Length: 400
Image (cartoon, rainbow, N blue to C red; front, top):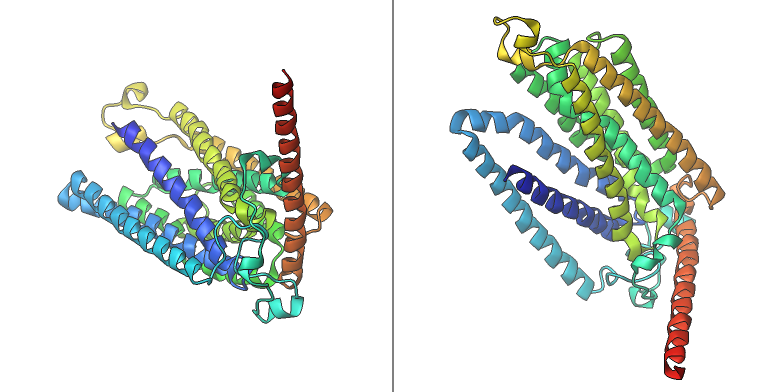
């Protein structure tokens, strides 16, 4: 039953994540506050994570586990109502011409920025949304999407796979390495989400002004590698609160430099597919890395029977040894370094393809339109080739 519930939760949560990012891209793509909008969206996710760490144990302790589960259901229902409201607003705005129809070609957003000066001033220079050519995305088009999209998916997996698995074991890590009680360890762990909720919009504003996404990704992965290396070399030396604050700031730097740039790798009609690819890379890492880390920690968890002691508390029995955490930290350093290498590769590939991800905001709009035109031209060629193939097949069948 629990496995089935977890499966349904995963299907729902990831579909929500793709839809949410597509909505933000649809409404704020190309605007002066695109990264800021993504930062606000992500900050509420982190705020929800913090509330889970802080309130769930209190509710379960006061009213029991079923009450805690019902509280989670109530929050999910509020989210469902908010989603219905968002769909209604989006539909009404599309009918009134505030945003272009879903599935349109070109940029697929309400903001086109061919003029650098007007972009900087926050003015739109787009023609009417009705003039945008409609080119629905087909699954066969995925081969035409730029390699920067796939590198961003890998980057997402490597960074999320470096940060969140540590957050998942942070409570146990603090209990073992810092000799904390469970309640204090949970409080310190929740600081990651609280700090992320505050920092994501602020760093998003900086990204909106500066641009240059691969630089932000490289800074984040370099910081993660340095942080885990310090914890590996000097266990217990860094204050737990400072540790989670640094980790949260590095995470916020990464997400601000990633999600706001995904829509620059594909036309608007492929926005949902693009975000789905990036989130798939994230989920692959979040599925595999915890398995590796859990296997390592289980191998270094001694029971009371194995130690030949009956006086050790139950909680102490279940805590992995510091050697196990050292192997985990070494693995996270390796993953972070892979993320840095991927950020360098992303910068190199982007530089060879118009440099849209490294471009300042004042010229990024024009580069985006040029990239979209190239991709849409490839889509049309694929459609023509498909029509010729179908015609030839029909002719062969009729002659037979």
